Length: 337
Length: 127
Image 1: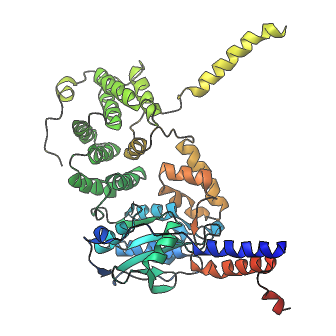
Image 2: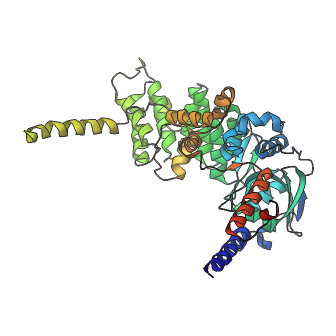
Image 3: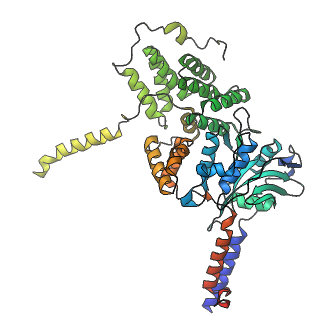
């Protein structure tokens, strides 16, 4: 009797687990999709059938080639396939895109965000969990089209060149993978309807790994989109600094501060340049402001280091620093390159 | 006797704690845009692992997971500091996209469990 009850309970549990999540989020009501064409298919997006467990290389080759960086899945195996896990990690896909000068922009977790990119002509690499939460089966595929009326998405997936999947089923598997999706962008092209913080972080990641040319043209694009944001200016200034063009860097930091007088990084980095030029007291002023702004954040140690360097007597001293005229006034908007 | 030792021991402890806490290792240099953005986006997320340590740790983990020695540096080169930290701290928990090939294996395991619990008995038909 007990045995039968236990069995029944197990079967019920298994059915519930296999059934996946409950209701769909109201992603695709008429209002949310009014601005989109009803049907798009990017038929020209290439197809790389997956070998073995290598859906990562295949999906990545698809989006990189479509973004003008021709690659094959074989060439990507060495970059993103992880033998010990028999699969590919998300961050490694992003890293491999960066190394090929393509900006990986991770999309906001909305289905409409995917559709918008497709309507703008960009295939979207997505992660899905085709298994269940307790027995996951992680998979990468590329969404290349959709049909709102039919409620379908079109994917390059595994060994299937044109897989149609109901939106409902897709979202269920996508939900279980925390709705992860990205597009690969040529440096000078912005995503459709960009989320500012996400897009800037994507560009800053390019900068941080030293892909300076790509980052510079992406920042230039971003500063056209958000002329009031200090971050693209700051990014360009940091790139100028990395290229040892301290004059352009200083101008850039001042331009960033003119847009946002509370930007810690601009204050700190300007202080560094002023110190190099021997303008100790001006450097101190910016470093103190930076320290005030950075208190309690992850930037505090870096700012404290700047201050210490400024206060240390052994600091580099230029004999006759020319600080006052150039540095004290705010940017006399010189023509920018 | 013990009491006499107390003071110096406390002083030594305080001194060593202070030296631990001082951020003397941080070199004065410019702050990258990404570090600035991340700091602005997440409030006071103090990094636990220095980026150099994170890279070393991530390198070890990736090597242990079978990444070819000749590819190792090139693969790490594309990762940001926080991504390296993520690999260093929890690479085993991160999902690895493998693809549809494993479906067969999963189905087999589910059948095996159902068989073991006694819900089905297909395997008994093949002695």
